[in-house]
Image (cartoon, rainbow, N blue to C red; front, side):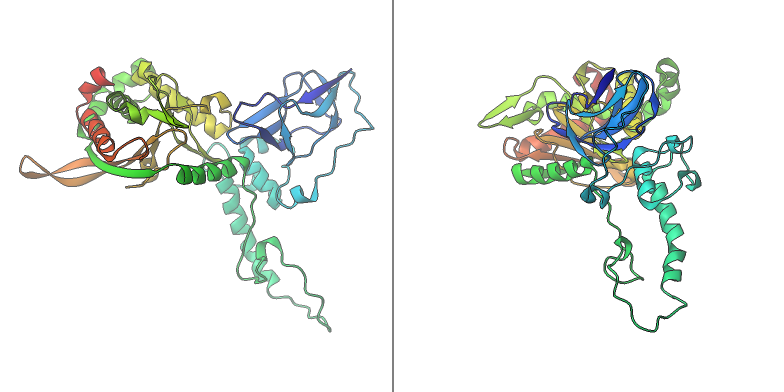
Length: 415
């Protein structure tokens, strides 16, 4: 009996997906529930599993093809016989020029991220030869390996030993030397669907919202003191570290309660004030920025917030984030400080009208009670939609954040 392999349901905001890779080929034996293909959407990567045990009888779309929900992309023959009338379709020229499916996964390939596998396949790199400092080979590991391996090749190609008696026809420039110069390398890499969506949404945010950013600075001494005194007991009790994120989530909620228009959105000629607090946490994943959401964050404990953020971070790195985790959100927090940023102007995550940017903590001389003392200071930034949030409210919002962080005990009341 033939059983169709179909694209799973996508969320309301995701219209289509790209087949990133096939993990099985026609004729391969599969078990029910076994992952046989990976789809790439605007937000996350999705796995397609075998609907039943049997043999892959047909693959209707190649890697790189765009499909929609419920599309039949192949079939499984439960009797264990591959179809001879439905060969694997050849990859279109337009797809071949920009992407290629990675090789079947081996023990080494399974230790690499999906993006790393695709980059390795595009360059013909054996992942087993790529060094990696982490548990998985990443895209950057592969690109670094390619750059080190390609340098000698350029030198050899630039000094041919045999000179023909008559000049041959000028060949078309290769992808790595598209400008015709062998000494200056270029490379074309297809933008992932997620990166295309990020680019589109950032441009939309700048063109549809009246964005403005205000800044303040926060003395992190009190929070750092609490973490120092409580971290061991917190870790022992909750089996999770006490970070800075939970403090800023709680402080943001307290400030949003005081200034509800920053927890709103514009729908046509109306302002929708939201009396719930779904806080988005921006995470820099390998394939691009993602913003999973802490639902009803005002009802979560410090430990629950820290655990949820840790889980989301691990899922984003593994490519297992669910679309539902990325939907909605009333306010966003992004932390460029983990990468060393001292100051930035974060861009709104539409339709939200506020985003809080955190930055690196640095010891700086500060005037306190008439004396110069060294304090751990952090610059914070609030980008807001000036259409419904005035500068006064934006400044007061950051002042409220500052007050709550510098007096952490107040978070128990207002957070």
